[in-house]
Amino acid sequence: MNQPSILVVDDELLIRDLLYDFFNEHGWDISIAENGEKALEILGSKKIDLVLTDLKMPVMDGLDLTSHVKRDYPDMPVVIMTGYPSVDSAVSALRQKVADYIIKPFNINHLYKTIEKKIKDKKD
Amino acid sequence: MSELINKNILIADNDELIVRNLKEFLINSGYKIDTAENCIELITKVKKKQYRIIILDYYLKESGVYNVLDELYDINSTAAVIMMFSDPSVDRVIAAFRKGVTDIIVKPFNVSELNANLETAFKQCKRNIDFQVFSRKIKKDEPALIEKV
Image 1: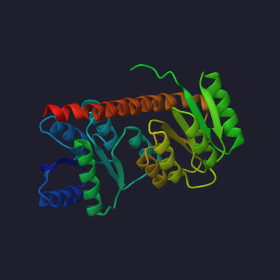
Image 2 (image 1 turned 120 degrees about the vertical axis):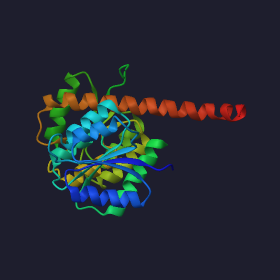
Image 3 (image 1 turned 135 degrees about the vertical axis):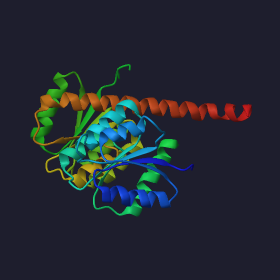
Image 4 (image 1 turned 180 degrees about the vertical axis):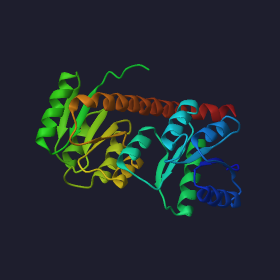
């Protein structure tokens, strides 16, 4: 598989740094944004294989971002991560055909394998 | 997108009241309805008829519902499944979608609100059928492609 390119969207600097360092160490091309609006700007400027986004964010939250992404890039896998899971948000996210809904705190190796598989599935 | 002619729906629930209300509403809406009150009956009926949508209760009796989903998709890979929950949890909802469920309904619900869920489910079923047809075509054309190479 070529070097995967992912976009991480989270308003928490700690999470952005953690994910940036982890995926960077694995040789992935990683872009980061602190909210949905910044994420859409990045999506319009470079090729991305997968979007990994937090749910609760200022400016544009993860569900709004997913809706924009699915409209403009229908085949783009979106993985939601949240520290505040709820039945309503899980149903809303999954009705938008997100690739997965992951609850924080998560095991980063498990997250890595999940994302790697989703990108592979998309390419197959 | 062309409409599906076959509009067979199977309701799998052991709650008689739910089944009666759902069945009446769906028949009046023009669908053909069968019912199953446990997993064994569900699988038996799925083997006999091509259903487009299966409305499945999470607590359907005899065998775990997720095991039944695997068996169901082995028999009918194009059906869209709507799962009914009376006490949904985040974990159950995520597990259901990871198992390929198309939509979730939380009990109690008003049957008149079902139309949007059915519309989504029929679209999903049509996509599943299109994908199956496309996959078969690729498989059929493969020897010719190999010969050309």
